[in-house]
Length: 179
Image (tube, rainbow, N blue to C red):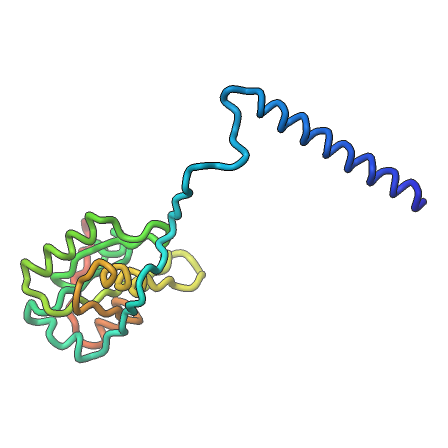
């Protein structure tokens, strides 16, 4: 029985070696063969932390100036969630966990800061799919980190999302049910 298992294993290994040799040989003689070692650097799609800067968590004192234009609220949730309810005067930068914010999104934040004369940027965006039982994803901290890496000053992230803002008295706008 052991002898049969050893013979079968050796035959399988021989088959793998022969098949690999045929594949590599065929690939080598083809003009459009696949290189065994690439000379092209791979792109990394997930945003990687490149700096030592950390996003601080926002607290009540960071939210108190919301009535005047010194705080810019950045909503990191998907556009559909933003349309359903958002902070009055906030901007929506839907954050992608795989790709991060785009260069256009970062530029939009910079334009809004300049236009409003904002001294603080509070990023919020805890989100879960409406019909999902899975845990909500905090999109605020990674977006805040990306804004800090883009050299935007005064950026903090808010844990707890829009619900935390409403508890602190920040006004929200809801989409009317008829539209």
